[in-house]
Length: 301
Image 1 (tube, rainbow, N blue to C red):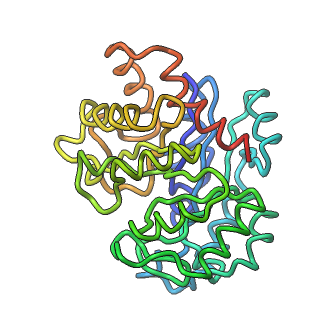
Image 2 (tube, one colour):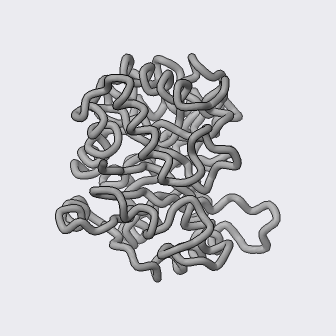
Image 3 (spheres, helix red, strand yellow):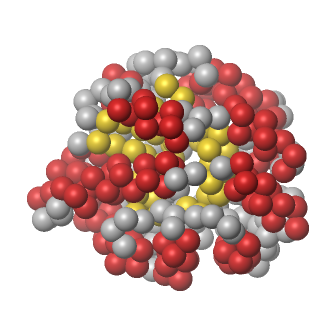
């Protein structure tokens, strides 16, 4: 099977533990993903995890980034580099900003971010900021500065990730976006009433924009036993509302304190894939969800 996952926090964990991507105690390393027929991963850099850290948000972006850039993995800055690396069977990393506090929420710093290789950005993490309201503040929308941020990011080819965004800011974004948007790691609110999950209307809106929704492995975003059948229920709901070409994976590996039952690291995707095969899912559908749909979205930027 091929795997393209849209969100992990492994880069921060590697820096925090001073470990390498080659082999480590995190959820993802190169020795474990070598079994996949193709592997691409979006590595998120979250700069506002500051409780307990002496570093500034800027340092919490730059220090893990400097550590990650020394790792032995191909970092694709463009769709062409992504496709070239995959054609050569190389593991591929793409960079995402989770919470723009690391660049002071300044649209003017986006060109530098893009030049470094970032292809995706949220507008918030778990707190309101100068751009928008987060999922804890459902009535705080997209501010004027946030609209400038979205406009320039999309001009530069940076995808806007709505994960962690408030309801009001989400709909404000839908009114101004000029390109597809995605939720890299959010599940279905109809099945699990958590502020980080998406309503049916939001799921439809993302699909209508041409974006994707990424299935998250975090137990509190799944509900119930948070096992393979529950994961499948969220997947089925996404497929029903979004369509087969707009659903992907965003496991939140190394960002989760409690993964879905059946997952201890990235290799759990193999077991989940086989489970879905046994449930009657076609190879074409599974390859879309596990690989092609996110590849198509990133390749179009």
